[in-house]
Image 1: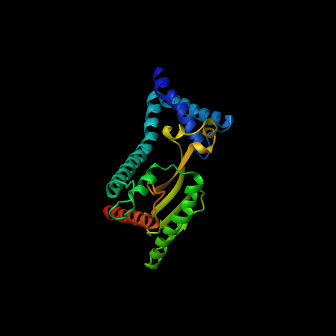
Image 2: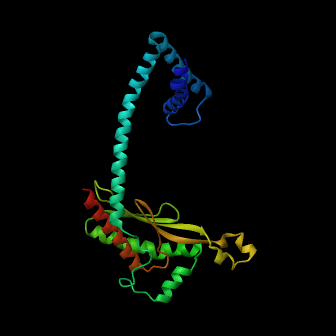
Image 3: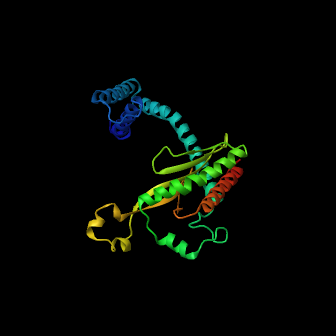
Length: 248
């Protein structure tokens, strides 16, 4: 009896909960009667096995029923390792993301570059920058891609983000997205505000951050000109194509 309590009862309650969740299509908050039903059903099956063949029968059925799930777990582990290997390949192909435009390729006055680094823009300014600079730059790239026979489209249906997606058929599509993200201003900026301002939206600043299919790239394109944005899109597109070449 002690063996039954240790090896079966302690796991049967969680098993009944899992079965209940699966039977409900993933709904976590199920009716009480339904939970009682699945727990009682497991108890009845266990009692029947104990009466029919004792503890050995219960252990045999438990192991036999768990065997298919072990195969599924092995397949899941293989898929996870494959995804991790692909992610590593992608990171290697991307190399290090550029924090600011390379001066040799995109010459800008150093005063302007310093201003872009130190300035903490407000939401309205970044939003206007996305509408006036980023979207036209993406449109130019899209038009050129379409001229070359590559299907692409721009989406801005979701607020505060603009996305360029290139259709690559059966392979992973290329996605270049810029999102408007807000952050709390650093302490040196907050110190320059009075107490009333700190209680309002004034204590936040915003960035236009780049996102690829793999997620955020942790750099801000606010203040870049159209040519710099186009070059960045092409750089990321070239790295994506190189990644697809490596995993073929």
